[in-house]
Length: 235
Image (cartoon, rainbow, N blue to C red; front, side, top):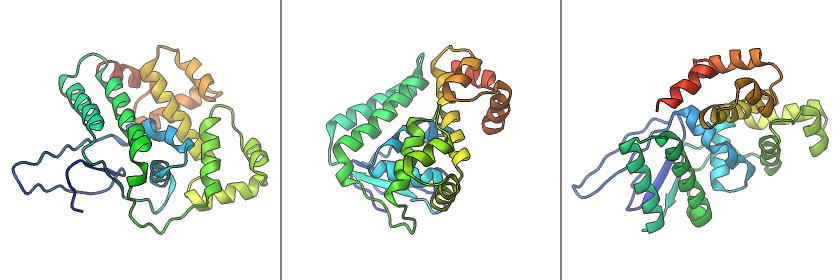
């Protein structure tokens, strides 16, 4: 792929890539995001229907995800300023830089959606999901703390069994797995941004058992919720 001035390319997690710069006047900015952070930041985009939403949907749930999404932003000075602020924040690493860096990164993507969605380029993918699957995922995302399979089946007028088959067919994942992914992403965000007790966070996101939550969280993040919170407080 040959990129030009002001082009932005977002790669899905796990995509192998390399960069080459062939003149002395070019500046290439490479922002590396942990997969857990990637998911936590961008889950909210699943509630919308736009190129980035489809890209992140395929990234999280498709067996054949798009490897990248590409924007030609054409000397957008406002976008330049946001990136400059993000770079300065990451270099200086002042207090709360992690939280502010994530907020600036969100600003970049929402700005791209608002001003450059029509310029988005996605590579051809064999994966094509019907629109109602995006609606189902958006509903789960919006009502993650209370939604049940029964409520979802009633909302979309499918039997629970058939709905499970549809979700599995078009996402490669299960309703429970998708719901847990969203809930744990929300939990991680709350652990970083609030002082709420872990038991309260569990209730807010829909977990009934603190023990189950702690066990699953440790498996996903390789540390307990308490350890995760402490690790973020020192960044």
